[in-house]
Length: 288
Image (cartoon, rainbow, N blue to C red; front, side, top):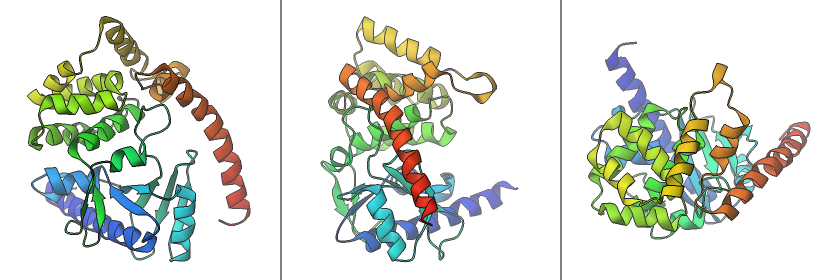
């Protein structure tokens, strides 16, 4: 496929995603608020041309409703469930009028074990905007958006993150008016400095954006924290035959600076997957 054809395809996908944001926000109002994140938001705020940012789905964080209840409400409005995720806080939905793209609904922006990053945390300081998508949505503060972007890189074990994830982070840092220390303070408050440090190393290796390295230094890790960060980088290196080791999966879920968060993340990963599998089996049995 030629570069021109790829650009057209990316642009069309972005247009479909924008319509999806508007439809989800409308169909869930007034019960829930919608916070667009990742590609559908970053492309519109930090890229010069929408066709520069590839995407395959539309990520939306929900405030005021669980992912399961949101999915059921959308089904009543004509949507279909594309996938009941193993994560009970995530459901993928699609709409017949928007072929070729799914909406990933997240009742929690990052899994348990990723510090303080909940939907309420992401919505704190957000502004309501009706211009970007034609309906009222919440636009997160740049500093909290950046922590969420870095958290998703960690969620992908860093090595499995897509190239555009690095460019998203670099563009937010390069184009946001907030000082580096302010971003560092937000990562500190989120209890994700160690995880952010590792993710930023990966971003810098691909973008060479000076503010990325400046933020990494501003995180101020201690010698002990640096050793832990480097251990996490080592165990999350590219796996043999594409299979992640148990240590890599554990490190991915223990991304927080806080030991209690890490324990909660590991427990949630074990319990949540088992619970979700039972729930999903029941949903499919009932034709959900």
